Length: 460
Image 1 (tube, rainbow, N blue to C red):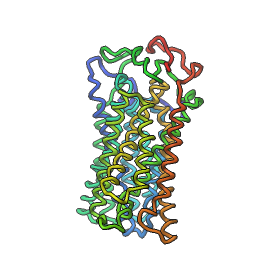
Image 2 (image 1 turned 180 degrees about the vertical axis):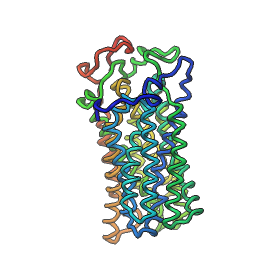
Image 3 (image 1 turned 30 degrees about the horizontal axis):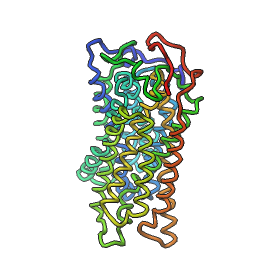
Image 4 (image 1 turned 60 degrees about the vertical axis):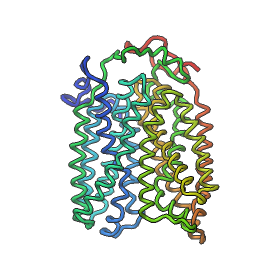
């Protein structure tokens, strides 16, 4: 997707979103949150799986298709739409996200009401997935430009919303299904309500979002001092040049492997804790397993803000050392002794999910450190193809191995032991990839622009 597309005019144009000198940058995080809290509903898709399966006669694999396609489209639309988002501005991007995400629910409602499941896959998975991708990256570069002094905290606030969206959507959706019914009529009505409410909620972001004027900087912030941190640059790299650097692909691998490790537990959390303690004197009931899933969502959300904010203090590379190194140790603890202690299992799982969320929230700031702010949104979009890959890879590893072990007559922790050791290996590879990341070579830098600060380059 390139500049052959016409730029938006009027209210959605980038020029109309430039902030006045008196505009407070603290109004931008709520705008970002309004979008991310909405599209974070994707993590609550599992609420719709049982009623869809019973009312439309679907298998578990079929009912997962809209979510899986949505995650794939998130990565693809973020990758191919990132340049458009950078050029047209966050207001246009948030509007497109709102239109796609909301209409995806409406199409899904039509599909359920008419018994045409392919419309649900098309609506929620394809159209809604485009809304996910555009909406996910839309506020990132804007927040980084407003908060160059605290990029980890800023992106953590927004991306925390994506992790926390399910905490709102899951009980809300369940309550509506209880009220409207779990038949096709009730599911369709629930989808319509979702589409309308999310359109209104996301409109708040469209109205509030602003971009800083060229040359704006926070009072008292000196980019030359920030550049003395390891891997931090005052130069800029275009999206086209970024994908020609080894740093991009190393960071892609780091994100992919960190997400693969986390999403495997997230997708299988409830049955996993039940299976781990099924043959012990302390079995886990279904209701307790649901509470465990809610705890994991909280850890996912808290990690996005807490760890990304910590990265502003200790640096992005050190933060990923924690995600990958400590994460591998937590997996090892579950593999060796997870079935001996519920507190140990739960604490380790919470740590892994907090690192999963933190990895998402820290990566935009890592990109800003390496490539500057020039086209960081477009670069971030391309990097999110790692999420699409991990969204397939993580559940595939966990489910395929568990199914194979079950077919062989095994049960309990044995269903997951092999998967856990595979995750440890993947995190170890990610750790090595993170260690190999170095400053971007000057040949990839853009020529200094007027708003750039003199003295481009990186310090090692």
